[in-house]
Length: 188
Image (cartoon, rainbow, N blue to C red; front, top):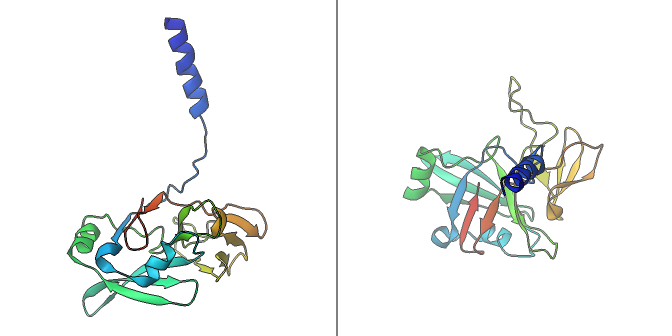
């Protein structure tokens, strides 16, 4: 029995060695209750098989903080932070990716997978570079994100794989879940 336990332990260590995660390990934290905020731009991206992706950023106007939602179909909206959003921000529980922006949505694929990606190009952005330079991705109406610096394109409908360009890293999605168009969005 002791020998069997040792073999199982050894197998676990071998199986867990040097495995690359399917998800991004970059910091990201967002909890957004669309049942409370009722934002139609975000709701469209949280609808299965919609092919709509929304870029989420924040801004401030006249002392108030806002979420900004811009989708790949040309629509945009802003929602003022409520008291719970402010609490999450003050507690460090509102982190929109590497440089203040993430992209969320369901692709066209039949797998009905909800995705959340960083807006920065994974092949150009370096969080350790000084000065810090942004290489934001632009998402077209078909759900293809492109980088104007390296000219790679990424298919957001299919897990962020490189659609065109010379090799490199795909965009790894963040772990995320939605409870429906006018439900909760959680990205970790």
